[in-house]
Image 1: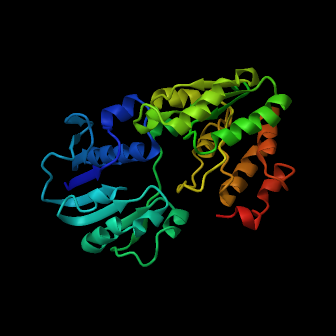
Image 2: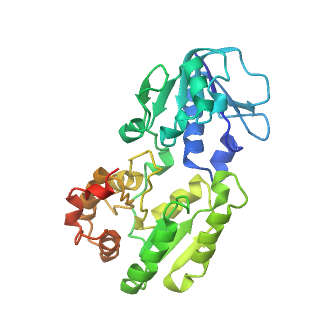
Length: 330
């Protein structure tokens, strides 16, 4: 049995919160990894900004200001520079990255990297490419995000109504999607609805002005079939995803993970209804996979939605297999 210590200096969260309420992707991945270590019999201690000390699913959660172990077998610092060296003596030290790694060039990160020499963990090949090659560290490894079991399986069911869903950060393309929906999708498919599950609560905040501005605009577009819902936890989100035909997402240069989980999930439930497909315009490989998957569907709503999402120069589902224009490559 190994002693594992993990630390995060971001928002307040813990394992119980992750199970019941809305939570961002990086925090959800952090909780899932901690609980997986615990299920495998390891001693797991998390220090973060949790509101109270607790033990949940075998993981002990404590404040960053509580006593920190002097040593451990594996230490994982998550994202923030303040936690790179929180445990002074770690047999193995990892620094888990969730965003493009250019920020590591800042002096506050550099001196800690040089002193503690952690192994940097990226979520994919593209993400790893954002790490400056000269950074002082003990190496780099790619470990893709896992997918919670709740989102890997779905029972066969009848096709849901003509409903699209958006579940990401409103600042990552929701305004673009609202424009597209009002101008092109709603006129062609008046029976279709766009359901939005998003908001500042996912990120541990009461309100973010830029988000609220976009979401307030969505509230004014009910006549176009746009419906906004409060952010929800895993169980409710899985049900909402299962009740939609397509997840529409433009993609964002700040994304580091190329997995289209809706497409993966669609493969699992294909016997009855292929479920969800996410659009990531900034990823050539994802677009090609999505194009092949869409070609297997016999549904006007899904097909027309994808064709409307195509940038200029793409005239059909089949054309998604073409290479990206140079200006759109990452």
